[in-house]
Every structure is written in structure tokens, then in C-alpha cells.
Length: 335
Ligand code: SF4
Image (cartoon, rainbow, N blue to C red; front, side):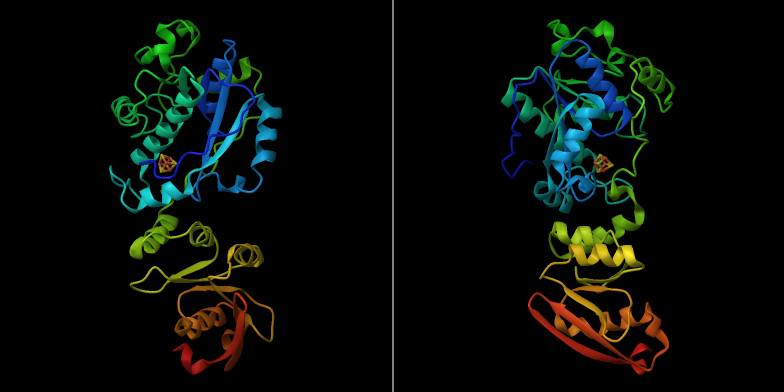
């Protein structure tokens, strides 16, 4: 599954334990439990356009914040290229939406295993809790994921460890099993009580999570996969505005709904996209991924979502990289 060689983060001291950091309380607790046993932990946060991408471009700042808030050493790894390829045909299929949960977890754990091998770390830690999520944290699924990611005996879930078979690090006495926990189920009370006991107060509330589990967004992403693998820029544009797929293709038009959408769309769209706006009055921005022949349709979508919607004739300007031009939309076109 790993096509692109993994970038090994630069670290100053080899860790004894590698941990997956999700930003949520459970992963913070799992890391703190292991740190309290005197072990050096290196946390890793994987990002893709579907989760954690807000960190892109400010990785160092984010890691500094995590270090000062929780005393956790963190590195960020962008999995986008491999992830986008995997999403085209996940070996174990999709969940309810376009979420390839099994392949996703296997990919992250396989990467963590490579890091653990590189650093000769004894264990990989996650904040998973048995039975917390209906599918991916069921005991049988957890075991299956371990097998498929080749992390059997290496993968330790400190919050539920006492309900699971001992890992090698526990058997060797490197990690004291007695100081691990037996949490299970969806309730949050034990974690909150443990956080209080450990004086962790400023933990983040559960975030929006993975965009691939959002039915509306997942549908947009699926459209883009009709003709190959989209780019991360395509996917980032999909997060804003009204989306109009160009039927039978992976091309699309997006029209900003408000100022924030417009600003984001302008920030993201590069020379591969047409950018349209009204020539004679303020209004939304439209982005077109497609051929020049689709410009009238994009201009029409733009007109419909602007103050010019009732005008009989509307001039729209466009640019794409160094090229630019304009066109006039007559209301008869609107239909
Ligand atoms: S919800 Fe998203 S991030 Fe979580 S396992 Fe599934 S695909 Fe991966």
C-alpha cells in the first residue's frame, strides 16, 4: 500500500514508543499513560485533505502548541499522495459513505510500524478504546487491522489494554501492564475522570473528524474519482461553496456562498482552474475545472447566485493562469 517512500521525521532522540496522535483526549491520555512510565514517546499525526489538513503549512507551529500544552513531541506526516491513490480502490472497500476506514487504519499503522522499525521503538500506541466505535473499534476488527498492518504484538491501546492480549513490550516488562486501563464502550466518563486525575484540562472537544464520513462531501469526492485520481487542490476546493459536477466527468463548477467561501476559493484555485467574477458589480467567485466551452455555464451559475440574477445582460470576467477574458450572459440563456 505504501508507494511513496515514507518521509522519516527529523527527531533529536530516538523514541522507545511511537504513538498515533489524533488530537482528541483519548490519544493524549494514551501518550501520557506511557510517558508516566518513564518512556520516551514520539507522537505522529497523519494528515490528508480529509483530516488534519488545516495544519498544512503551519506544522511547526502546531507541534510547538502541542508540546507546550501537553509536553508531547509531535511530528506531522502528510499522507496525501498514497491516500488519494488508495481511495480510488480501497482493498477492503468503503464504509457507509466514501470512507475507506479499514484501508485507512491499515495505512496509518503500517506507516507507524515503519517508523517504529526505523527508530527501533518497542511499541506503537493509539488512544483506541474497545467498543467505542461501532465497527472500527470492535475487538474482531481491531485484531484484523493489527494482522493486516503487521503490528500484532506491537500495537498497544493503553486505555483498553487490560481487555486485550498483552503486547511484546508488556511481556518484556518495558511497559507495566498493571498501570494500564480496561476502559470499554462509548461512555466518556472514565476518560474524563482520568484526564482530571492527570490534570489535563485544556483538551480539545471532539473535532469534526474525517470529511469522508460526511455524506454530502463524500458524494462530491466520489464524483471527482469518476475519471482517475483528483489532486489535493481539487479536494480542497470541494470544501467550499455550491458544487455543480459537470455530468459524466470529474470536472466541476463551484460558486462561493459568502465572503469566506470566496476568499478560500481564491486562495486555493491555481493556474489549472478558471476563476470567474462579475465584471460590473461585487458578487461571488466561481471556479471552473473544465474546458473553455464550459465557461458560459459557469458564468450562468455565477449570475444565478449573485445580485445580477434578474438583469437581462450580465458581463462576467474570467482568468486562468496568465490568460483572461470576458463573456456576456443574456437572461435567455438562463432558461
Ligand atoms: S473515519 Fe476517516 S480517518 Fe477515520 S478511519 Fe475512517 S477514513 Fe480513516
